[in-house]
Length: 311
Image 1 (tube, rainbow, N blue to C red):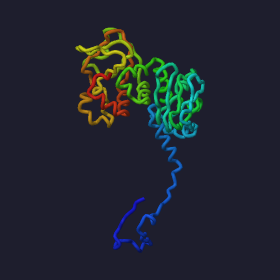
Image 2 (cartoon, helix red, strand yellow):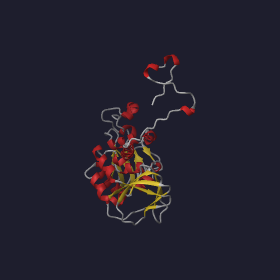
Image 3 (cartoon, helix red, strand yellow):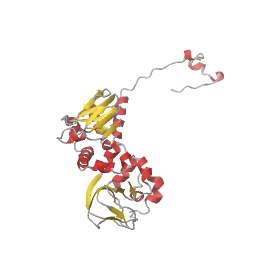
Image 4 (cartoon, rainbow, N blue to C red):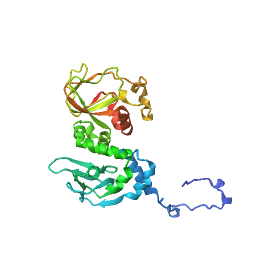
Protein backbone atom coordinates (compact mmCIF):
# COMPACT_ATOMS: atom_id res chain seq x y z
CA UNK A 1 0.00 0.00 0.00
CA UNK A 2 1.25 3.49 -0.86
CA UNK A 3 0.45 6.53 1.28
CA UNK A 4 0.73 9.74 -0.73
CA UNK A 5 0.60 13.22 0.81
CA UNK A 6 -0.58 16.08 -1.41
CA UNK A 7 -1.33 19.72 -0.89
CA UNK A 8 -4.95 20.76 -0.36
CA UNK A 9 -4.95 22.61 -3.71
CA UNK A 10 -4.07 19.38 -5.49
CA UNK A 11 -6.50 17.09 -3.69
CA UNK A 12 -8.74 15.19 -6.20
CA UNK A 13 -12.17 15.97 -4.68
CA UNK A 14 -13.89 15.08 -7.97
CA UNK A 15 -12.79 11.46 -7.57
CA UNK A 16 -14.96 11.04 -4.52
CA UNK A 17 -12.09 10.95 -2.01
CA UNK A 18 -12.30 12.51 1.42
CA UNK A 19 -9.64 14.09 3.59
CA UNK A 20 -8.96 12.04 6.70
CA UNK A 21 -8.75 13.78 10.02
CA UNK A 22 -5.34 14.15 11.64
CA UNK A 23 -4.26 11.96 14.54
CA UNK A 24 -3.40 8.34 15.28
CA UNK A 25 -6.99 7.57 16.25
CA UNK A 26 -8.05 8.28 12.67
CA UNK A 27 -5.50 5.82 11.21
CA UNK A 28 -7.10 3.46 8.71
CA UNK A 29 -6.02 -0.16 9.05
CA UNK A 30 -6.51 -2.43 6.07
CA UNK A 31 -6.61 -6.15 6.79
CA UNK A 32 -4.59 -8.19 4.30
CA UNK A 33 -5.31 -11.90 4.20
CA UNK A 34 -2.27 -14.15 4.43
CA UNK A 35 -1.72 -15.87 1.13
CA UNK A 36 -2.68 -19.51 1.56
CA UNK A 37 0.38 -20.60 -0.40
CA UNK A 38 2.86 -18.43 1.52
CA UNK A 39 3.82 -21.26 3.90
CA UNK A 40 4.27 -23.66 1.00
CA UNK A 41 6.61 -21.24 -0.76
CA UNK A 42 8.63 -20.78 2.44
CA UNK A 43 8.96 -24.56 2.86
CA UNK A 44 10.04 -25.08 -0.74
CA UNK A 45 12.56 -22.23 -0.39
CA UNK A 46 13.99 -23.80 2.76
CA UNK A 47 14.24 -27.28 1.26
CA UNK A 48 15.70 -25.87 -1.96
CA UNK A 49 18.43 -24.12 0.04
CA UNK A 50 19.63 -27.44 1.51
CA UNK A 51 22.76 -28.60 -0.27
CA UNK A 52 21.64 -32.07 -1.32
CA UNK A 53 18.22 -30.91 -2.57
CA UNK A 54 19.32 -28.05 -4.84
CA UNK A 55 19.09 -30.20 -7.96
CA UNK A 56 15.66 -31.66 -7.12
CA UNK A 57 13.31 -30.87 -10.04
CA UNK A 58 10.52 -28.36 -9.39
CA UNK A 59 7.98 -31.01 -10.43
CA UNK A 60 8.78 -32.76 -7.14
CA UNK A 61 7.56 -29.76 -5.09
CA UNK A 62 3.98 -31.01 -4.88
CA UNK A 63 5.10 -34.46 -3.73
CA UNK A 64 7.28 -32.92 -1.04
CA UNK A 65 4.46 -30.78 0.32
CA UNK A 66 2.11 -33.78 0.42
CA UNK A 67 4.60 -36.21 1.96
CA UNK A 68 5.93 -34.78 5.21
CA UNK A 69 4.46 -34.72 8.69
CA UNK A 70 5.23 -31.72 10.89
CA UNK A 71 6.51 -32.91 14.25
CA UNK A 72 6.81 -30.59 17.26
CA UNK A 73 9.13 -31.35 20.17
CA UNK A 74 9.47 -29.54 23.49
CA UNK A 75 12.80 -28.46 24.93
CA UNK A 76 14.63 -31.49 26.36
CA UNK A 77 12.52 -34.00 24.45
CA UNK A 78 14.29 -36.86 22.65
CA UNK A 79 13.52 -37.04 18.93
CA UNK A 80 15.13 -40.47 18.61
CA UNK A 81 17.71 -42.49 20.53
CA UNK A 82 20.89 -44.21 19.50
CA UNK A 83 19.99 -47.81 18.65
CA UNK A 84 16.42 -47.06 17.55
CA UNK A 85 15.26 -48.80 14.38
CA UNK A 86 12.98 -45.98 13.24
CA UNK A 87 13.34 -45.23 9.52
CA UNK A 88 12.46 -41.54 9.21
CA UNK A 89 14.31 -38.55 7.79
CA UNK A 90 14.04 -35.14 9.47
CA UNK A 91 14.59 -31.54 8.39
CA UNK A 92 14.75 -28.89 11.11
CA UNK A 93 12.17 -26.22 10.35
CA UNK A 94 12.51 -24.26 13.59
CA UNK A 95 14.57 -24.49 16.77
CA UNK A 96 17.86 -26.11 17.79
CA UNK A 97 18.66 -29.82 18.13
CA UNK A 98 21.69 -31.57 19.62
CA UNK A 99 23.27 -34.76 18.28
CA UNK A 100 25.20 -36.94 20.74
CA UNK A 101 26.88 -40.35 20.66
CA UNK A 102 27.24 -42.52 23.76
CA UNK A 103 30.74 -42.95 25.21
CA UNK A 104 32.02 -40.13 23.01
CA UNK A 105 32.47 -36.41 23.75
CA UNK A 106 31.03 -35.80 20.29
CA UNK A 107 28.16 -33.30 20.24
CA UNK A 108 26.89 -30.99 17.54
CA UNK A 109 24.01 -28.61 17.10
CA UNK A 110 21.49 -28.58 14.26
CA UNK A 111 19.62 -25.46 13.17
CA UNK A 112 16.92 -24.54 10.64
CA UNK A 113 17.63 -26.21 7.30
CA UNK A 114 19.87 -28.91 8.81
CA UNK A 115 18.75 -32.51 8.42
CA UNK A 116 19.36 -35.79 10.20
CA UNK A 117 18.36 -39.43 10.01
CA UNK A 118 19.70 -40.08 6.52
CA UNK A 119 21.99 -42.93 7.63
CA UNK A 120 19.17 -45.12 8.95
CA UNK A 121 17.00 -44.02 6.04
CA UNK A 122 19.39 -45.38 3.41
CA UNK A 123 20.72 -48.41 5.29
CA UNK A 124 19.29 -51.06 7.58
CA UNK A 125 21.47 -50.13 10.53
CA UNK A 126 20.07 -48.71 13.77
CA UNK A 127 20.33 -45.05 14.67
CA UNK A 128 23.97 -44.17 15.30
CA UNK A 129 23.27 -41.16 17.52
CA UNK A 130 20.71 -39.58 19.83
CA UNK A 131 18.99 -36.33 18.79
CA UNK A 132 17.52 -34.08 21.47
CA UNK A 133 15.59 -30.80 21.27
CA UNK A 134 17.60 -27.99 22.89
CA UNK A 135 14.65 -25.63 22.39
CA UNK A 136 11.10 -26.00 21.18
CA UNK A 137 11.63 -27.63 17.81
CA UNK A 138 9.54 -28.16 14.69
CA UNK A 139 10.73 -30.73 12.14
CA UNK A 140 9.52 -32.02 8.81
CA UNK A 141 9.43 -35.81 9.05
CA UNK A 142 9.54 -38.01 5.95
CA UNK A 143 8.89 -41.74 6.21
CA UNK A 144 11.34 -44.02 4.43
CA UNK A 145 9.04 -45.31 1.68
CA UNK A 146 7.58 -41.89 0.90
CA UNK A 147 10.97 -40.20 0.84
CA UNK A 148 12.44 -42.82 -1.49
CA UNK A 149 9.52 -42.31 -3.85
CA UNK A 150 10.35 -38.61 -4.04
CA UNK A 151 14.12 -38.92 -4.55
CA UNK A 152 14.30 -42.20 -6.47
CA UNK A 153 16.45 -41.98 -9.59
CA UNK A 154 17.28 -38.33 -8.94
CA UNK A 155 20.60 -36.72 -8.14
CA UNK A 156 19.48 -36.42 -4.50
CA UNK A 157 19.30 -40.21 -4.17
CA UNK A 158 22.83 -40.71 -5.44
CA UNK A 159 24.25 -37.82 -3.39
CA UNK A 160 22.78 -39.20 -0.17
CA UNK A 161 24.11 -42.67 -0.91
CA UNK A 162 27.52 -41.15 -1.54
CA UNK A 163 27.42 -39.21 1.75
CA UNK A 164 26.61 -42.43 3.62
CA UNK A 165 29.54 -44.12 1.88
CA UNK A 166 31.90 -41.27 2.78
CA UNK A 167 30.80 -41.28 6.41
CA UNK A 168 31.49 -45.00 6.54
CA UNK A 169 35.03 -44.22 5.39
CA UNK A 170 35.48 -41.64 8.20
CA UNK A 171 35.46 -38.70 5.79
CA UNK A 172 33.76 -36.61 8.47
CA UNK A 173 36.62 -37.24 10.90
CA UNK A 174 39.10 -36.19 8.24
CA UNK A 175 37.27 -32.89 7.74
CA UNK A 176 37.30 -32.37 11.52
CA UNK A 177 41.09 -32.82 11.49
CA UNK A 178 41.35 -29.62 9.43
CA UNK A 179 41.23 -26.64 11.79
CA UNK A 180 39.63 -24.40 9.17
CA UNK A 181 37.16 -26.83 7.58
CA UNK A 182 36.06 -28.08 11.00
CA UNK A 183 34.52 -24.64 11.58
CA UNK A 184 32.07 -25.11 8.70
CA UNK A 185 28.40 -25.68 9.40
CA UNK A 186 27.24 -29.31 9.37
CA UNK A 187 25.36 -28.78 6.12
CA UNK A 188 28.58 -27.49 4.50
CA UNK A 189 30.52 -30.52 5.72
CA UNK A 190 27.86 -32.84 4.32
CA UNK A 191 27.92 -30.99 1.01
CA UNK A 192 31.71 -31.34 0.86
CA UNK A 193 31.48 -35.08 1.57
CA UNK A 194 28.96 -35.47 -1.23
CA UNK A 195 31.56 -34.40 -3.82
CA UNK A 196 34.61 -36.26 -2.45
CA UNK A 197 35.96 -39.43 -4.04
CA UNK A 198 38.55 -41.71 -2.37
CA UNK A 199 41.87 -42.40 -4.08
CA UNK A 200 45.32 -43.78 -3.26
CA UNK A 201 48.78 -42.44 -4.15
CA UNK A 202 52.00 -44.45 -3.84
CA UNK A 203 55.25 -43.10 -2.49
CA UNK A 204 56.93 -40.87 -5.07
CA UNK A 205 53.78 -40.49 -7.20
CA UNK A 206 52.77 -37.00 -8.32
CA UNK A 207 49.23 -35.86 -7.57
CA UNK A 208 49.82 -33.14 -10.17
CA UNK A 209 52.83 -31.54 -11.82
CA UNK A 210 53.68 -28.01 -12.85
CA UNK A 211 52.25 -27.28 -16.30
CA UNK A 212 49.58 -30.00 -16.17
CA UNK A 213 45.92 -29.09 -16.58
CA UNK A 214 44.31 -28.36 -13.20
CA UNK A 215 41.56 -30.87 -12.47
CA UNK A 216 41.40 -31.68 -8.76
CA UNK A 217 41.98 -30.68 -5.14
CA UNK A 218 42.59 -33.24 -2.37
CA UNK A 219 41.85 -33.73 1.31
CA UNK A 220 44.49 -35.94 2.95
CA UNK A 221 43.09 -38.98 4.78
CA UNK A 222 46.44 -40.58 5.63
CA UNK A 223 50.06 -40.29 4.57
CA UNK A 224 52.22 -37.26 3.78
CA UNK A 225 52.54 -34.86 0.84
CA UNK A 226 54.81 -31.98 -0.07
CA UNK A 227 55.08 -29.38 -2.81
CA UNK A 228 58.25 -29.42 -4.86
CA UNK A 229 60.95 -27.46 -3.02
CA UNK A 230 58.91 -27.36 0.21
CA UNK A 231 61.15 -27.12 3.27
CA UNK A 232 58.50 -27.02 5.98
CA UNK A 233 56.73 -29.95 7.67
CA UNK A 234 54.94 -32.14 5.09
CA UNK A 235 51.16 -32.02 4.83
CA UNK A 236 49.38 -34.84 6.69
CA UNK A 237 45.88 -35.93 7.73
CA UNK A 238 43.25 -33.21 7.33
CA UNK A 239 45.23 -30.98 4.98
CA UNK A 240 43.24 -29.61 2.03
CA UNK A 241 45.56 -29.10 -0.97
CA UNK A 242 44.67 -27.38 -4.22
CA UNK A 243 45.44 -24.27 -6.25
CA UNK A 244 42.07 -22.66 -5.67
CA UNK A 245 42.66 -19.65 -7.92
CA UNK A 246 43.44 -21.98 -10.81
CA UNK A 247 40.60 -24.40 -10.14
CA UNK A 248 37.83 -21.81 -9.98
CA UNK A 249 35.48 -21.74 -12.93
CA UNK A 250 34.95 -18.12 -14.02
CA UNK A 251 31.85 -19.00 -16.04
CA UNK A 252 29.94 -18.48 -12.78
CA UNK A 253 29.08 -14.82 -12.35
CA UNK A 254 30.17 -14.79 -8.73
CA UNK A 255 33.73 -15.38 -9.87
CA UNK A 256 33.75 -12.58 -12.42
CA UNK A 257 35.78 -10.19 -10.30
CA UNK A 258 38.44 -12.86 -9.82
CA UNK A 259 38.60 -13.75 -13.50
CA UNK A 260 41.86 -12.01 -14.30
CA UNK A 261 43.82 -14.23 -11.96
CA UNK A 262 41.68 -17.37 -11.69
CA UNK A 263 41.90 -18.17 -15.39
CA UNK A 264 44.96 -17.27 -17.37
CA UNK A 265 44.15 -19.68 -20.20
CA UNK A 266 41.26 -21.67 -21.60
CA UNK A 267 42.64 -24.74 -19.79
CA UNK A 268 44.34 -23.49 -16.61
CA UNK A 269 47.48 -25.33 -15.54
CA UNK A 270 49.17 -25.97 -12.23
CA UNK A 271 52.02 -23.75 -11.13
CA UNK A 272 53.14 -26.26 -8.49
CA UNK A 273 54.06 -29.94 -8.24
CA UNK A 274 52.59 -32.05 -5.43
CA UNK A 275 54.20 -35.39 -4.50
CA UNK A 276 53.26 -38.22 -2.14
CA UNK A 277 56.11 -38.80 0.32
CA UNK A 278 54.69 -42.17 1.36
CA UNK A 279 51.79 -44.44 0.46
CA UNK A 280 48.78 -42.23 1.13
CA UNK A 281 44.98 -42.11 1.00
CA UNK A 282 43.10 -39.00 -0.05
CA UNK A 283 39.68 -37.70 -0.99
CA UNK A 284 39.70 -36.03 -4.40
CA UNK A 285 37.36 -33.24 -5.43
CA UNK A 286 36.76 -32.50 -9.08
CA UNK A 287 37.36 -28.97 -10.39
CA UNK A 288 33.72 -28.43 -11.41
CA UNK A 289 32.48 -29.67 -8.04
CA UNK A 290 34.81 -27.45 -6.02
CA UNK A 291 33.72 -24.46 -8.13
CA UNK A 292 30.06 -25.19 -7.36
CA UNK A 293 30.82 -25.73 -3.68
CA UNK A 294 32.56 -22.35 -3.40
CA UNK A 295 29.78 -20.68 -5.39
CA UNK A 296 27.31 -21.57 -2.63
CA UNK A 297 29.79 -20.94 0.19
CA UNK A 298 31.34 -17.51 -0.49
CA UNK A 299 32.82 -17.25 3.02
CA UNK A 300 35.00 -20.28 2.33
CA UNK A 301 35.80 -18.91 -1.12
CA UNK A 302 37.19 -15.66 0.28
CA UNK A 303 39.37 -17.55 2.77
CA UNK A 304 40.65 -19.87 0.04
CA UNK A 305 41.71 -17.35 -2.59
CA UNK A 306 45.45 -17.07 -3.10
CA UNK A 307 46.19 -20.31 -1.22
CA UNK A 308 47.63 -23.71 -2.13
CA UNK A 309 46.55 -25.37 1.10
CA UNK A 310 44.10 -25.08 4.01
CA UNK A 311 44.90 -26.66 7.38
